[in-house]
Image (cartoon, rainbow, N blue to C red; front, side):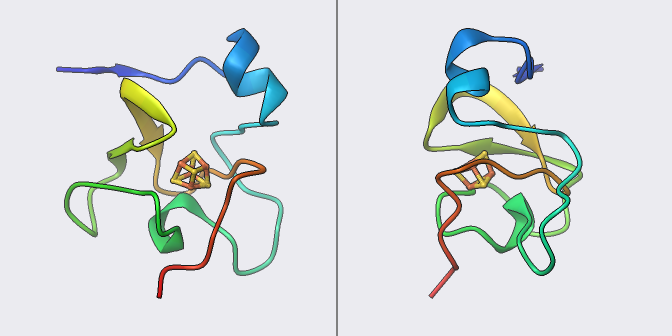
Length: 66
Ligand code: SF4
């Protein structure tokens, strides 16, 4: 299985990625860049190739799913 993104990773830090979003209505689950299956707890993300982000996570590249 793919590794989870490490929030301490330099790229993750640059994008302020966290496993638990503090922004109302903004979570990886609702982000246009999240891949994989809706409902999965951990999902691939276009910004972090080869890693998984938390569906409840967030980063500065968040973009509302159309
Ligand atoms: Fe989550 Fe950021 Fe990836 Fe969107 S771009 S799914 S907010 S880590």
